[in-house]
Length: 169
Image (cartoon, rainbow, N blue to C red; front, side, top):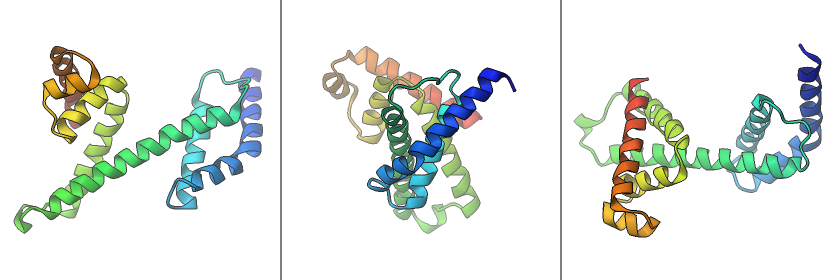
């Protein structure tokens, strides 16, 4: 292990010791359980550890809060996606409902799609959600986002390609 890598790990270890409990408490106010808060706080530190050059951080709590918020939003989106899928299953005929294994595969696919969609620019994601999730037309989306209908079409195509790639993984 190089000296720079060791000092970075020591620095991050110190940040963990100083701020982990604080971040968990902060997250507990917004989440269902302490375990969920601890998972997200740990993931925030893992993302910092994976960053190429984090030394020194002037405002570690601000950075950790930003990372944790993004992780919370991702968790909420994933939970909503799963809930919407399961709600759709409730309204289907019993013969149409898949096996538990098929349901698990579908939820994994939705998770892959969600992770891929999260890598897209915000306008592309928003356009896709407004179209597929809210059922807005391309002209309605264009007006709402202040973009052209052509841009809406392009963004939808990018998002659909992203979803297709997730299906092929």
